[in-house]
Structures are given as structure tokens and as C-alpha cells.
Length: 159
Image 1 (cartoon, rainbow, N blue to C red):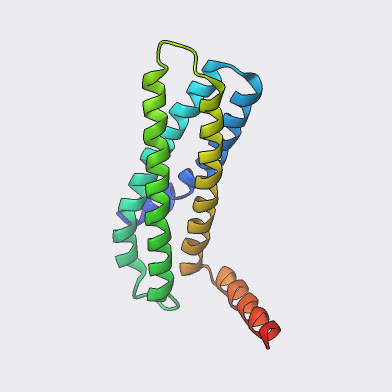
Image 2 (spheres, rainbow, N blue to C red; image 1 turned 135 degrees about the horizontal axis):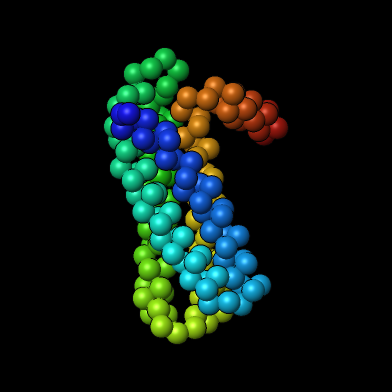
């Protein structure tokens, strides 16, 4: 298995994981259980670690696809810039999750911890979706075509 394969294999984990973390934090708020909140925090920290691995395998993946037909430098750069921002945001959320786990390791986590986790996860999930869409546009022509058609429709409506 190459680094490219590792990137392609793991890149879905933070995207789906962030959505699952969102559900975990929502459940923690509803259930009002410290165990649920701590599980959501731990899960978020783990997803952040995977997101960092995905980010750092992106460079070798870029080298593998940048010369392929239909791949543009612009699409790669847009994905790379979005990935950097998303990885920073996910790392901050994961780091804060670890801090919260440490601070509340021997006591009940207040409900605001789950609320902050939920809000942070909503933001990170949106960033993950944006980054994943840009990554998909690198090689998936069906996504590129929809984007091109939409831009053309937007351009026509401006006239």
C-alpha cells in the first residue's frame, strides 16, 4: 500500500467521523451523562489524529496525480488550502477535547462542554464537507461537470 492509497483510504474517516461526533455531542446534551460527553470528546480527539495523518499524506498523493490527464493545479491547490484550514480547525477541536478530558477526568463534565463540542463539531463538519468536495473535484469529472454547469448558469443569470 502506498501513501496515495493511505490518503484515499483514510480521507473519508474524518469527514464521516466529524458527522458522527456531531451526533455524539447532541446525544450527550440530550442524555446529560458525563460518560456520553467524555466518549464524544475522546472520539473527537481520535478523529483529529486521523485528520492530521490524512493531511500529511496529501502531499505525496498530490505528486501521484498532478500530471494525470484532467487534473488541474488549481483544483489541487484549492483542496490543499481547504485541507490546511480544516486540519487546523479539527486539531484545535481535538486538542480542546483532550484538555476537557483531562480537566474533567475525575469529575462530572458540565453540559456546556457538550454544547461547545457540538458547536465546534458543526463548524468542523462544514469545513470537512467543503474540503472533501474540493478533493473529489480533482478526479471525479461528474463533480467537476456539475460545478462547471452551475458556474455557467450563475454567469448567465448575471447577464
